[in-house]
Structures are given as structure tokens and as C-alpha cells.
Image (cartoon, rainbow, N blue to C red; front, side):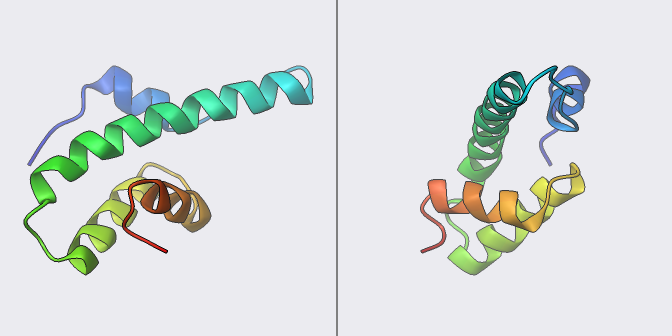
Amino acid sequence: MSQIPEEEESDLQGSSSGVNETNHRDSSDALGDQLLEVVRRKATPMQGLPVETQKRRLAGFIQRRGHSWDTAKQILKQLGLMN
């Protein structure tokens, strides 16, 4: 199983509270981009598995890091695993 360095994992687990909505949105976008990259790396060795297995494992991976199902679904769509 692949391990994520602690600094990457801690970066994925929360969001900074911005002073105004624009800062919050920017930090959320950066967090989403970073999460997408980590999930892409995690998905690479799973390419030979059935799509349903990939979706289940990656969604669990995302949710165990404190993100909602909606976030997991968006990431899976960006990876082309969901319609």
C-alpha cells in the first residue's frame, strides 16, 4: 500500500479559514487541486482493476481524509470514473 508523506496528508485534511469569501474560495480551489493530484497518484496502480472497485477505493480514500461524498464524487468525475 502506498503511504502519503505526513505533510501532504495534513494539507489535505482541512481548509484554512479565509478572512473573506474570495480568500476562502481560493484556498478551497488550491486544496481541491492538491487533493486531485494525490488521488491521481493513488489511482495509477489501480488501473487494472474494475472501475467499480477503483471508484469504491478512491472514494473511501478521499472520505477517510475528511472530505464529503460530494467532494469524492467531483474528484471521481474529473478522473473519468463517473458520469
